[in-house]
Image 1 (cartoon, rainbow, N blue to C red):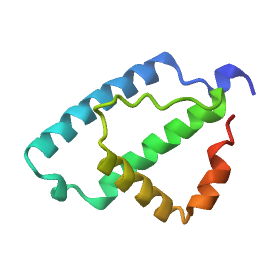
Image 2 (tube, helix red, strand yellow):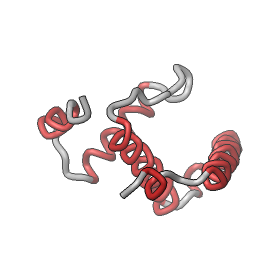
Image 3 (cartoon, rainbow, N blue to C red):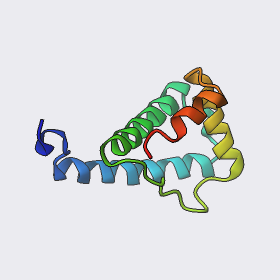
Image 4 (cartoon, helix red, strand yellow):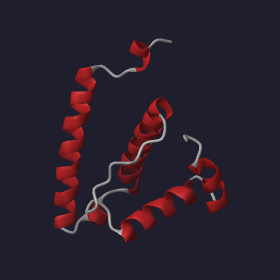
Length: 105
């Protein structure tokens, strides 16, 4: 397999960037209007799956990277709620997570 077989063409990256920008705007609007409970569990899961798969695919390809989270992007509660939900969903305990934590180093 060559790099061209696994590299996303530039038009797809541009489209993905536009979708992510729009998603951020929509999420902010839903949050500002306090309508987060109206979003289905499946929709939230689909967004999380897509982001996790994209991040994992990148780190598999280029090695461990720091997730470029801005300091104001997630607060501690949002981070712990998300991490806990992901660990529970994958039936991963903290010991298992510690094993994988250094896999890309």
